[in-house]
View 1 (cartoon, helix red, strand yellow):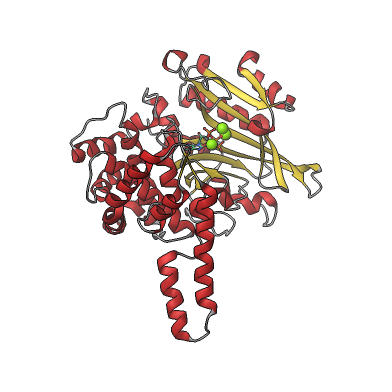
View 2 (cartoon, protein in one colour):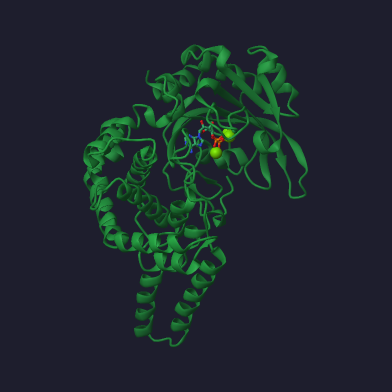
Length: 461
Ligand code: ATP
Ligand code: MG
Ligand code: MG
Ligand code: MG
């Protein structure tokens, strides 16, 4: 089944206008990447532009969640359901239909079009949302409707503005396959797989926190394509689906290695990160020392390090781009058309990192031997500064050893370096030292905030 097509056609048949995915880089400095289907409709929801003639829409939006408020970089390779780049299917009502229809559509799509067995479905609603409870009861038995608080089931665009309760659809993949303590409805495990979030935008919150009902409440929903495809293909892990397996197969071939329990995470991270970097590059993002380009660099270097663990000692990622194209190229022409450019950019960056990765890994391993409590901030800084290991990469390398980096020391060294760069610049105002300053910036980078403190990017969505 072509889930993407099925979804868009379904909502088209219900009168929705099918709109294209907006770019991954939004025209909004507060937001690092487009991270949900609603981003392109934000101004309509806040009322800052008039409601369009067509009051309902549907889309399949490419999303990146690798920085800002939504950051799933740390989840990739560790859960069965998170990607840095994924496709979010969504249907939207701008003051047109509301809860009753949104719930009825969702139920129809999930049980008829997707034909998911009803006895595996669960829904969650906000504790206060009796209306949603009554509406869901028409479709699903009461004991499968669970209430949760603000953390799980209340959505807001920011501290002020449109907000409201949400309701999510979960698919129980069966307790026989999952045994972590987190595998309960509402937990972080993968057994109860969240597939769809229905947001009921019904209030406007002012700066005092007071919520006033919106005269024309709206609907914003998001369903993860990769999760649904995996379910439809009978896979318990997104990475086992046809959206990822060909990339993993190709990696196996290039590495002459078969996945084992120990290294399967590396294969998955590479497949995930290949998708993210390829799409990001195809949309004009360049490797950089800061901002979005630094997120791109961090994603690629994480993939390279996993490649290193699989035995690669020279660029390999570009060799996977044709396989990615065979999966997504017919729908996403940007990947097909820019395939050669993507390969070239990836290889340049891989080359840069492969030059220093050996020395960096030895330094890391050496230091690890001496580490008892915290991993030295000085060494983490040296890895970053001299060998091009972003801090989050070092942190990820320490994760399975349950070790943390001495962040205070790392931050101190970072600040010192910035001050040095500033002092060097203040020394004189003539253009030749400006040239020197540029060199310094090239060497040290202007501002690495996105690099080591991903929560500092003040995304509101
Ligand atoms: P989770 O709790 O699994 O992290 P979420 O609650 O953060 O998901 P939402 O913000 O509600 O996700 O996004 C709507 C839908 O998009 C989710 O129900 C899920 O199907 C999908 N989704 C969200 N994050 C990811 C991701 N990192 N990779 C793949 N799909 C995702
Ligand atoms: Mg999440
Ligand atoms: Mg969730
Ligand atoms: Mg959710």
